[in-house]
Image (tube, rainbow, N blue to C red):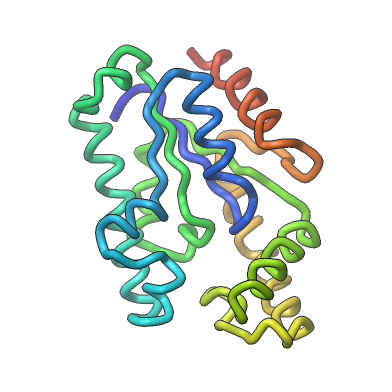
Length: 196
């Protein structure tokens, strides 16, 4: 594992991918996104994979995606930028904590960063997405977009459980609720610089 591998964790719509790309740019290092890798490896988005093949199939694909990130990093990242920067940034899917195989890989990643956001903020973003596609995501049981209250109740339980998990397993937490993605990336970069 490259000495300074940073993985961004948090619930769906916390801004992991956007902040991760900006962070990688600031650090001049490679960026990996497990959701993008799932789509590359299966030909389906995470939502499509869950809908068509079920959550167990998604969990297998998610674990394979994170494993391939770790393998690329472990191999000295064939990418020269990784070797020169000694850093790699990974953005993980929001439900990684519910995937036993994928979550087990976290212990090998030195810098685990929790992008926290208020429950109401995340649920509003999920609702906007649900209204666009017609239903909430699989982790909210594909509840139709019109069933706002049912989805909100499911999300509240999930939010409490996942937030507790990420607070416990992460080495650094940043409240993104009132920050732009650029500010989040800059804050993580500043924290990272203290560790090198």
